[in-house]
Image (tube, rainbow, N blue to C red):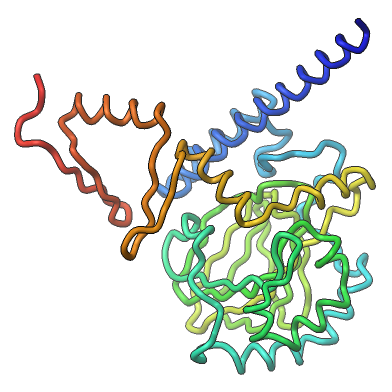
Length: 324
């Protein structure tokens, strides 16, 4: 009986944690939508309302997966981590290699796909050298010097659930305010090419990139990038686990690194799809029965036969006569 009660209690805790994660996701989507529509005041009102309801502890830190007990500090001191001086000592070698690769025929730094929704205007390109616990051989082949340097830092490779990314932002770009998915990871920026006219704002504080000098911040705090200069900005991004994490928490996070296949499954589930396939020069998604029935009902009621998103505009296709 006691065992059964214990299992019930565990299931209750698990259910509450899942529900809270869903609430954070929906609140986060709403806040992102307000930011994307250019209404930061409403985004802030929404964030404050979420805090009042106990969704988050503070409106600037909105991780969808929040681990309690970790120091909530937007910016961290780079001198507290041994490998920062090592990275900075190798800045010149990394930059020299990057300058040889960018804009060449086999340049792997391409327009971002997963972060595309954060771009209010401009262009943001990325190439992942390390992701999901594995080196990306095709990218590392273009940056062998950089990869060999980073291989000596387990904190950002074998002991990291995050990424190592070459990030390039063009002039005129605005990456809207947003929060990372978890407070369990700190983000490191090694600035490689930093022209004038750049702004990185973290939790309302303007930070300054300096070539060859690392910045460390908790990207579960709201942050945004503006580029009002005239030349591309290039930064090497690295992730590390939050130093306050306990051993068991670290191990669970490392074990949960997803393969590409697992990420595709999560995408399908999150968006109510049950199948995807390539067709001609595109990708076709099929909604699950629940989503399909809802769409069919709304389309029948409104007379809509199809819709296309073209940037921020929606093109509706309707039948000639709307049903009575």
